[in-house]
Length: 458
Ligand code: ARG
View (cartoon, rainbow, N blue to C red):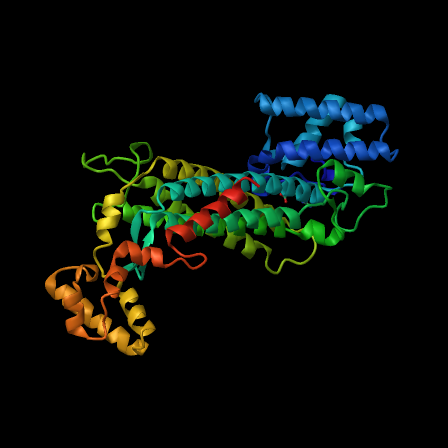
């Protein structure tokens, strides 16, 4: 079969070249965007007097049929058609005849692929962005129910200070809100239409790129055609935004894995989101969280892979750039299902308040309160730190938590300790003392919940 570009060639393509060069088996995922772009391009050509109304109508109708054939599975995907752009154009011409051959006026596959891929990236950014909002919604709902649930706050994975489970969930809500904003800002930054840039230099045809931009839902056309056909920043932005969201999801997943272990028992992941073992009947595994943690590796890989493809490419289009798609398709698919299942799993998870609160009794979580109290009462902080350390040692010897020491115990360590300190060492009081803006006290957390509620309903 004769190739569209074969005019200057005397010999046929090698079979291996066909297979090696083709992108059709993955870029067919862009068929909707390709057809949408072609319809708008044809409308512009018609408005500019380059196509007749009849030709434009035939093209639009023919493209509608192509779409139907693709969707009902009768479309023939052939390796020799090379990519989605040529496959669709060939089939269109088979259906409508010569008018189909005029569609490619004033465009090239270089701006065509830049358009299709950009439309794909923008639409999926919006979907992922909205999924992140639901995730923030579930975290905020959990927080609403657990403002009073005390959890040992950690640094270095060692007990540090008492915080609420709500506060911990809202830390993740903050991350996923920023992730939402990362998608939003990449959509804004890349909201420019590539079509009409042609191969690299623009076109002598009297086209209207503002018309195509507007009708494809973009703010404006891109400003420089050479950049446009070479640019894959929009895909890099998306891959980066996905990677950062995954880094956040994998940190939360890691905590869920730890928290759901028998040693912690802070949460119980529902049966619906757990898996069993083929040999050990007793097992219930947190595979969802582990897979999210694991998939972070592949989405990060996809980002590094495209960064590496793009580095040092001379302007303008190079075939290397065909390698841009599979990683993006993979990251997008992985992100959508991962965010969705994480949201569902969190909504169905049981939070074991008693286990979290009894864990707070290990690790002398109110030690900083004792040191702060002494320092506020004239003891130099270094000395206060030392005295508190001794109090911790006494508690350890007695086999109790610092919060369980009596006034007499404390007084015998240093007589600058006064009775007022005793309630301050109570763990709940310790948590609720941290009412500074953004802190873990119930009243500070309530403000955070209203902040997220306000944002969610915006
Ligand atoms: N299949 C190609 C890609 O994905 C389309 C652009 C081809 N352009 C070219 N000049 N060969 O990048």
